[in-house]
Image (tube, helix red, strand yellow):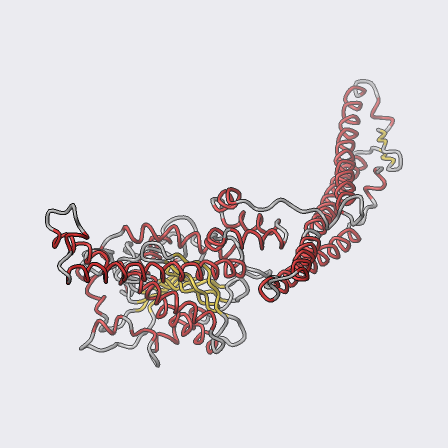
Length: 549
């Protein structure tokens, strides 16, 4: 490449070619995903026989061939795209050097790449200075040309290696499988980096990771919601089976212990116990609590399964799930990665896996209200029970440790929503907390910038700051709050026992919106009435969620 070639370079055809390769890569990606979905259940539909084995092998080979064609096509696109932008920048640098030289009176021969100073510049006393200036200009041009040559060679090599040809094995090589170690290492990175890494995998590699490590894929912020949903449905099926088996074992043990007691043989169950009756009572108490907890989790898992399979409601996505501890669940009504408006609903005290049915119902209600408020834009609502909520009002809900534990998880989840969202325009992201859920949000929004366009505190006991301006992760005008007149939670900030100022008080500085006053004779029910039919709070929340209030 000569200086003249660089100065006359037109990046337009390179951009156009890069666009075509990008479109090809996307079509290959779509075709691979369709092929994977279409042949995934082949072994179940045709499980036995030579024909079945041959079909499974052929399908596997075809999946690998199509899937592994994606990355080469993507790399050609990236090489051409970088070449277009890189060469255009180098052309502008060369133009600047030539223009500066000519402005200073130098003659530039773009064909040969030589620079000649005017005759008068070589007069007595100026010889060394002129020679130095001429040499500097030539060095600058030479440096630009060398970078252009290097970029040209790099682009040519990338195209040669990745262009379809038997020699290169385009689309036929089997890439390395994703390992658990690799998945665990990626999961420690920030969501944006995880998203970029996930996109470098072929559809076949993504499918393999989902099948082999559904727990890791399903819990990793930065992996697209649709892929996490596939993984978490496997986690759901496995969790339901494990909980059912655990409940059965626990029930069998309870029945056995009681039967032995009724037969007067309890000493056989506890041969080393000084007091078998006391040992029995202690074990039965533990087993009964375990059985209650397990059946509660089964109830929650069944509610999630029913919601995912319900054809009468909007499509739901299982974004995260764990049956450990009290259990956690994140379920979205609509796909947050493609929605215009995204709500993360954080429930409060007493929330665990057994309560998932009610939480998902509230998410469905808010999604429906948003459609009425803004039918022209899609809204996804995420039920985010992704933290260990306080089990009881006293003393648990008065403590900060649950909010301290939940805040970084919520912050990372919100960052993940930004990382995986598709399209040129970002979604409007609202984070809505009810009761202690608002306290969790308060802790999450007091650090670095928090990925939310609006915060909504509903029936809040306080968010551990005295004024909205102390929520440094967002602007003060992004903070909204409401509390029903007869909500029992009003007494908590008034007593000044736990979490600071009431966000619905005017001196807090939030944008307060109306809710129905509730029932003065049942303040506990009023605390949960914000999603009741005809409650004005629902309309106001929908307007905030869609950016109309």
